[in-house]
Length: 435
Image 1: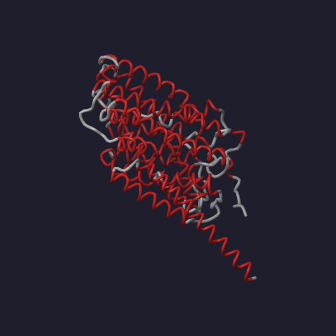
Image 2: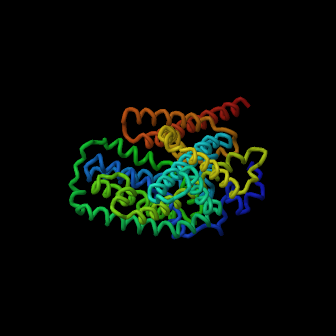
Image 3: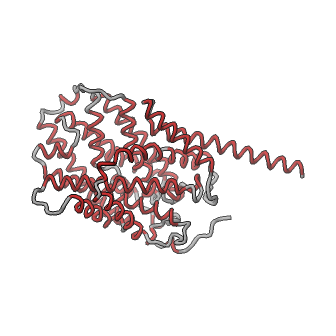
């Protein structure tokens, strides 16, 4: 028996948080690609690329970036195909594996992740403004809060708002970044030194790929909130490859080239030191806005999933939940969360990767939705095992810890579900014989 469906979520004002995205609201390949590219086009990718390249020989650094991004693209594509088929957000999609209440785990983690990254980037940008413009009269905490509320302007308008900002910000960020890389790299003597670079300090290949995957596994997972608008699965594959090849891999390579050329792992700071302060500022504006409005958007969808089973029954419009997310993030940003961020990020990087592994395992291998159940214990057990193995992998420097968590959780989920289904079948056969 299917769950009774209320009429209100069909209203676009709820951003289809609880229902399939209608076929007439699906987007074409170009729109999907541009909006999806807005996720990985972020300042953090410059830093990740710079960090990896500064501690590995150039060829090995490029291999690590390629391997890490292939893992991320796989997550984007598999999660995206499920989201496109079901037409559901990532958190509501998790109900198929975890059940109604079980999906709250994923929702809470995504909500916390959104708050963490939004507030951190608000704090970083406010400090950039303060360093570039000595005349800026507003204190850093208040500037950070203002910036977060600016990102809210496009996020609260749903997919249309994201698309509008991405159509402006994505091309601008790409062009400005190319200009910055060419100017900075060649002003330091060209690319010959880059190709022949030998680092003074070393980083293991495992640690490098773990940093790449761990830094963006959250972003890759939540892209399902946009790919649910895809008309075809092939659009998800094409858009996912293009978006992450340019926005994630491309920006990381740019950060790597600049880091080796200048010795500065922060691309924006390298541009400022090269006399491109204004260009750096505009680049930061577009890179951050096209990413952070989507994190407010996905945080809002996660919050809507949480309140769906409360007395509110989900009857809170998207613009209101998005405002709640932005307000909380603005408070954290104003409080200087940047100083306490690393333990939170490491904690989330262990707990989040097993969840898409379980969702993918359910969608492609088990195919017995638990969205009518309150909680699916096999999913919880698989998630715990995946998180523990991911932590062990991280501490022992074995393989790629986020990938260990994702794969192990998915494999154990399939195993547990097969055992559970076989036991259920045995009980039914026994009862038939007795009867």
